[in-house]
Structures are given as structure tokens and as C-alpha cells.
Image (cartoon, rainbow, N blue to C red; front, side, top):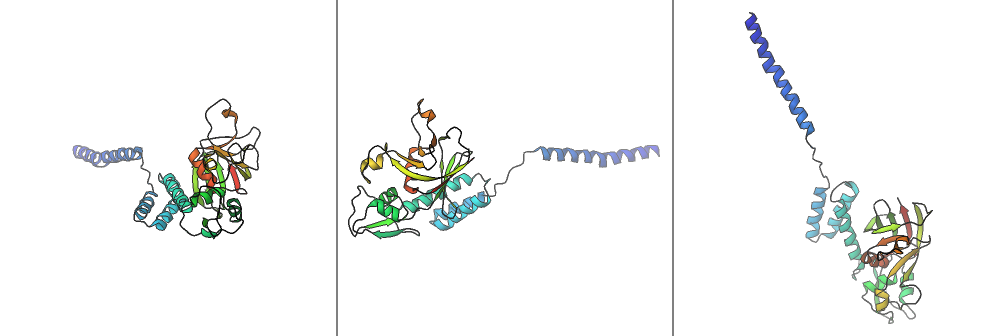
Length: 268
């Protein structure tokens, strides 16, 4: 009986206890495995790309906006913002009349500056969209114009400058190459765009001239010493110049879209 009992005990140990320890080992092994993070925005991004590739621009952009709204942790979030921004700017800068844009018939006494101000636009925008060189206008001439009602959000932590629509929606994001806030200035503040300075600001460059188009440009704000400008050549002097610095291509595009009076919000 003892042997049988011993065999019985051995049987119970082998069939019940040993498998239980194996199961515990398997559980520890599974838990130690690196968990794969599921990217819930991937499918939405792929659907957007498929729509855009077939010419369904509106549907593709809507899917990208959906990704940006619901899946900010997705690896496709940054690319979605870039694509949406490029599409938004391409639409706005095209000569085709799309929602928000309209044709303006030049009247006697009109100038590019007066038209831009009356239509809440910029001279640069009118010049660019209509492919003009020179500021002379002919009565009866047709121009494509559009109101530009954006606000500017500058994030110091992410080093980005974002244009937002009048409703507060995303329009386009630009990368800050660097920034330097004046000493004793708060790290967060609100201001407004005051003016566009073309060239050195010491001489008047004819609007629409080749010199005007190629000249360096700087957006100055009501708050002093925080202009939006292009990156300067490295030098000991440039290290002390304050403001928000973009690459030259982004700066050129931005000055077409930003006009005096626009709100600028600087955040950490």
C-alpha cells in the first residue's frame, strides 16, 4: 500500500504540480516579452493616401484631419499635418477660384496695396497668385483675391509656428530653426503682427518689382524685438539677435499669408 501510495503521490506530483510550474514559467516569459504598440492611426492614414491617389482630395483631407484629431500619438501624425498643410497652401495660392477666393475687377485709382488692404489680404499674395511683376494696374483688369484671416501660434517646446484659421483650425505648420526671446521677457505672451519690413527698411522698394520679390522680409510684431524672420548667417553678432527664425523658403511663404493685425500667441 505504501508503494502504491508512493506511486500515487508521485503521479499527482508529476501530473499536477510539475505542469503548474511550467505554466508559471510560460506566464513570466509572456509578460517579459516586449509589447507591440498598436498604431490605430495607420489604417486611417492608408485610407487617406488611397483617396488622395485617386483624386478624391476632399475625402483624403477629411481622413487626415480625423487622424490628427483622434490619433495624435500615431507615427503618421506628423506626416498627416505636413500633407494637410501643403494641400491647404496649394489651394490658397492657386489662381483657380475656390471657396473663399473671388475675382476682383480693378477700378480707376486702385493700387495693389489698397486692394490688399480692402480685401484683408497681402500685396505679396495678390502678386503671387496673379503672377504679376510690377505694381501697375489697368482699369478693368481681373485679379484673384482672398481674405487672409489667420492667427499665429508659436510653440517654444516643439519649435513650431502654426497658422490657424479664423475658426481656430489647423492650416499649416512651419519648423522654427531657432528662437531667442529678449532678456526679462515672459516665456508666454500674446501680441499682434505690426508690419512687414522689406529689405533693410531704409529705402522704398517698388511693390511687385524684382527687387521687392527677392528682398529679405521680416514680420515685425507690436511687442518689440520678437520679429518673425529668416535664419541669419552664423556670426558672433547674430547670436544676440532676438526673434523667431525660419528657413528662407518658409519665411517667403509665410509673408504671403500673414498680414498686419493678425494675432500672435507664443506658448511654452
